[in-house]
Image 1 (cartoon, rainbow, N blue to C red):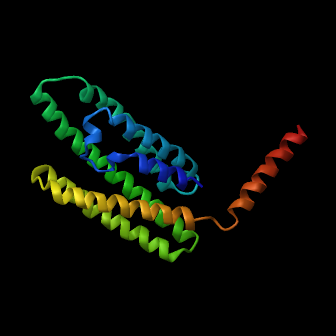
Image 2: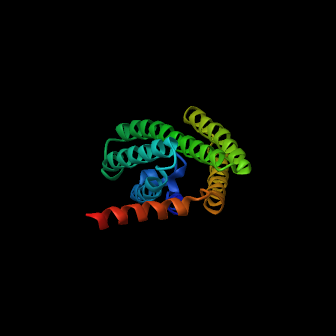
Image 3: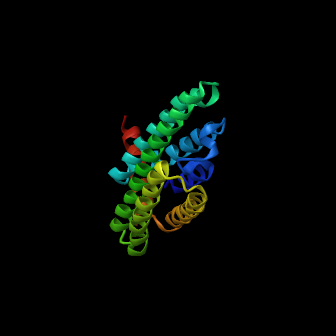
Length: 195
């Protein structure tokens, strides 16, 4: 369905936290590569509901923003300008990553509801709440630095999200999905034969 690519991309995005070393070095390209892998998975998932489509567009915006940030990271600029850039870029990354997670979990919640997987739907809603708490803490951390706590919280959130995505990969399939794809293929094949 696409969850496998999302998991691989999520593993690659070492910068899932808005404030890690990846965003301040050449590692920014690792985050871009991971986001592109996730984008490939989201393109496949976009057919299932509107929230996956929104997540896909947020992923495109994330890649674009990271590529725009790259020159600031790589070039040696004035220290004051660099510090200002890091604060502004952290705010933008925090907003984008929050929206990405929020809509991704909303998409899984909607999909779980459709296929009547109540357990996964509850987990998706729990992850939405966890995302709100996690990114609210990051927003506060911009003004009141609490680095060790945020590192532990970020690692926990990262692992928690990976486990959830793996659960989606293992449990979500549309009943009759394979049959629907087969029917679509047969219909296209028949149209081609008639021509």
